[in-house]
Length: 71
Image (cartoon, rainbow, N blue to C red; front, side, top):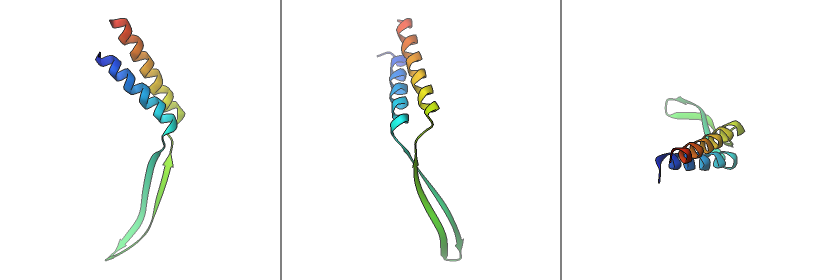
């Protein structure tokens, strides 16, 4: 398999997953005073902006086209 085609497939899969799979995000707001720790941890999941998915998909399609033209 051509390396360009492999990159194209990876970009297409990542582009599709960017629309569906949320990314976990964890924040820790805490203060340590001696041996005590006071704070709040927040867990959140957010999806990537749709523009990221579109750019990844467009890059995958472009790589497929260039890979097919080259051979």
